[in-house]
Image (cartoon, rainbow, N blue to C red):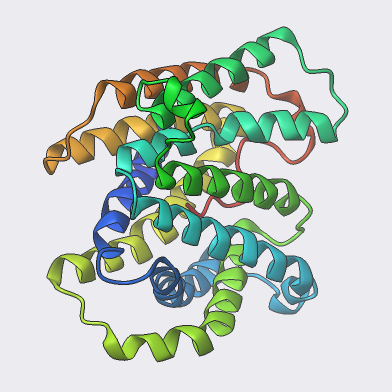
Length: 302
């Protein structure tokens, strides 16, 4: 059983790398093109993985194509474009801290859909998380919020959080297995974005760091984290696995420090508050479990 907890840690480590390497790649390509290239590279790997792991009946999966199309637009395109746009304006650590509020938001939305009364513990946890995000967004100066003097990247990341919440809740309606669903959605994304992405390739010249970052994003967070996450959720349960998402901003900050990206005290304080709040909110997320289990959809794709 212990290896599954290691898998959860590795999955979050790889997702943290997505923030770091994404910030490198978006210096040379647009967030839209990065998103298109990411899923074009990941789609074949996901198809092979689905065949090996789930042995899907593709015809049954494709019967759900309208929902797959919607989810691809939300999670694979919307979330990625928003989060990569955020990385053009803020640090990976700040983006990951703002994004870390996602499990708490998903829990409260799931509770509202399930018509579950929001208890004091959950209100407390969400309140603490919001304070943490506000500390990061305001850079430790609450008056900046009144002046509307906020970093554009933080706003883009908040948009990504909202989009991912919608993706998560709607994704619970799928009957398709998680890996197969990811393969189908990545394929749809590749086909739909190709006519818009291909003309942009003419002026693109990636250096070694950006090319390496793109390959990392296509393989590690898009494919390997997906496998490690879903295998572990089946063994330890969605609620237990969800708590491990709290290490994502920590890993992102440590990776940033490793490559010389400084971290200010508002990011540290905000990160601690968000992690604390999400942990409080995550305890016994009954509403989320009723809707399919866990803080993330059937296949986390960050």
